[in-house]
Image (tube, rainbow, N blue to C red):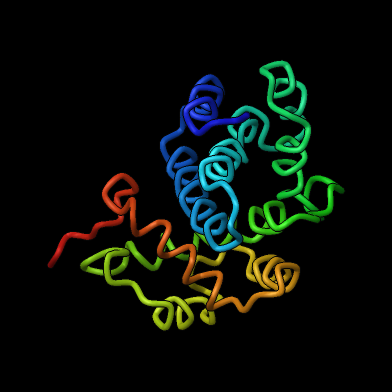
Length: 188
């Protein structure tokens, strides 16, 4: 079984950029919250979140084309590899998200970018970020403009969940790790 520790070790061999590592951690912790919501194993979902951009730093133009074989060689099961590949559905893969795990990763990947940006603008970071504040920023297309809102909404629809509910889960998952994510704010 893929553990979070194993995912961190595998990831360390491929990912060195601080910004990418931080993004993977954001997704990791948001995925843990999504797993709890669905009554699944948070550590497994976190591990998949940690590995979701495994090949991105080395192959940004061929993202997810250099993921399956190296992970398979390291003993990662096909189900977990498929989940990782599914987050690129419609962008760089044709692996359609089918399970709650896959649909969550598809949605959370972009969503955490907006949450992180919201938290960075606040004196207390994510520690007092509420869904209402997130929703205001989500509606402003100029805010965190690189985050694909249509993709996030598509993912929420796949999950059969409202954006505010998914965002609330992700905020809670990230909030529990605010210091590690550098999202605790300055307090000023």
